[in-house]
Length: 177
View (cartoon, rainbow, N blue to C red):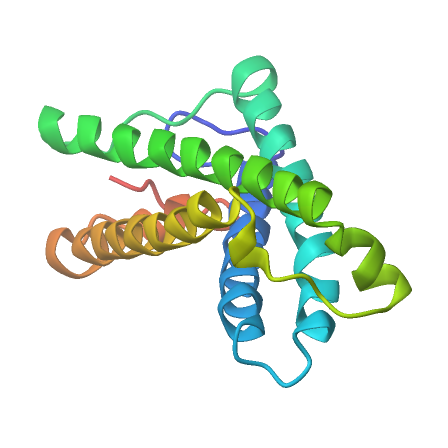
């Protein structure tokens, strides 16, 4: 099933979720490692196209949810406050991600690093450019949001035992609540 049902996410939403998750983890890893790497340009040659790919996935994901699919109903017996918190964390993900995309694009444009990365030469000192600070802060916020997201998923899986992971995986399976 391509689209979501009332109790589980469809194949498109599941694919977008997991591709985005792995892409964001790879972006964080390459971004943080580039600062101390012997050849930071090599990591940034992965980081920049991957950032563009995650941007495309995120834009598609927003369009998917706004125009083409509906999210499943909340899991049964979820407190209203928990549901609001979950929606807030997801919204914060989108806000931070779009901020990261914007600051990354601005950093590449202002510093001229795009030409260096794909043409050669020494990398600029990124700290000399304004978008560097929000890009770094955004990375830290993404880590905090990821921790909150994974902690909530583990809470549902291990404490509530409400099959939250089954909702965000492929196949029919049992109802998630």
